[in-house]
Picture 1 (cartoon, rainbow over the protein chains, first blue to last red):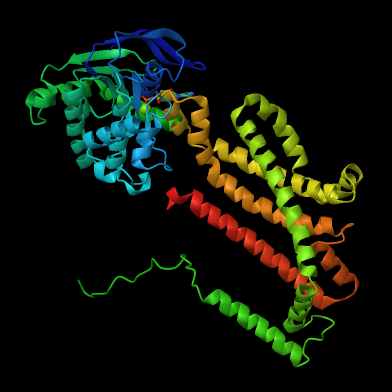
Picture 2 (picture 1 turned 90 degrees about the horizontal axis):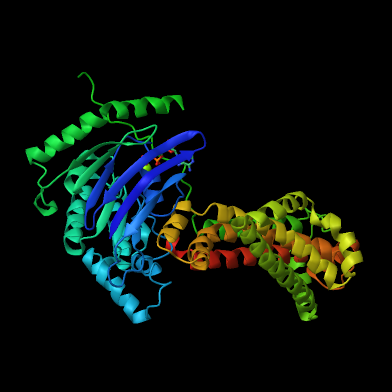
Length: 255
Length: 263
Ligand SMILES: Nc1ncnc2c1ncn2[C@@H]1O[C@H](COP(=O)(O)OP(=O)(O)O)[C@@H](O)[C@H]1O
Ligand SMILES: [Mg+2]
């Protein structure tokens, strides 16, 4: 499915957080959204996911959702958002329970997505027993269970250490190769953005506008972080963001 | 480098552990000392009867079958009053936690009535509900209702908003979100509210039974006090302690069962 944002504007009180964002995300495309902290990336993602009403503009979904899709726009949260009182398998099962699915069909889907995220052995573990990377895998399994058309990921790897992040990035690329979902991926990590995005969109702050866009043609599976082209792209993004990031950092001191 | 010294350890303490056998030993020592002091004449029986005399009073209560009469009367009031107060309190707490109108309408009432010691209203309850069971159950009901409401809505307010957002983002129904996210999230707070409301209920039970009750541990203690039968008084007080401990134990079991996920 394709996603189109038309003139998204959003204010919190007198503060204009987002100002006229136009963006189109093609089917099967991963768009990475980067920008200094506080520029409205999370707000924009919430608006795309229908969790927040924009002050102006609209988000449109185009095309048919895939066969058996229960939740076209599906979120992956930075802090995992697992229910601590449900085991890994039951956390996945949660999002299927409101749909007309027999108990056997449901457990088949749960077993399938847990296998795809390498969690079969941890199906009955409580979230508190799992490492951060494992928890985010459970959250990914939960997202896959509803067969999403568009994945909305808000800094899904930011709470993890760098080794775990590396492993999960490989897993994400593997999953994307199989499912070819459309995705909007928010991150503040530029290397993550050039690794995972077909396109990288830079958001400026106060007000949040699209200040730079960059396409990266190397297929996801072939990207190698030693590749000078990718590193140069990350460097260019950093130059585009640097002053704003510094401004954001200083501003926090005045709030 | 002139001198080589080991770094002294300074990270200890501030971590009390529970040592299983110490508690019972403290009890045995205290009661033995008390018994010995009574037998040696250091404590006159009028001031404080020996534990053995209190035990004898308890045994008499048991033999005459009056123990059961008192205990069943008290337990019945406790269970009925506490259960009603808890059911209505949890429902009201959820309403306040979930609906703006309920919050706006109920919160002022709850805030105004919560601080009133319910025992001060007992005369009114007697006029309204009669001197019999009605006024006693009503006292317990109101006494448990308010702390339960407050614990419940605070628990609902404290549920992690990102979990609710998660539920909404997956298109869960409102009822599913309440049942599978809000209720379990508020449960720890609700259960610790039960602990408080249960001890309030026991206090109010005794107070209410001191007015116009034939049976009940409160009535038994009051009568013993009027007759200066301090042995019976101590026996009655010990029963209240055991009752409180039992309720606390049951709530701990419920917590362990329902909050297994906390580990
Ligand atoms: N619910 C809210 N009410 C008021 N201001 C908000 C709210 N949510 C976010 N903001 C403000 O909007 C700006 C953008 O926030 P956010 O989207 O979280 O930024 P990012 O994810 O890019 O760091 C921030 O300045 C933040 O303080
Ligand atoms: Mg954010």
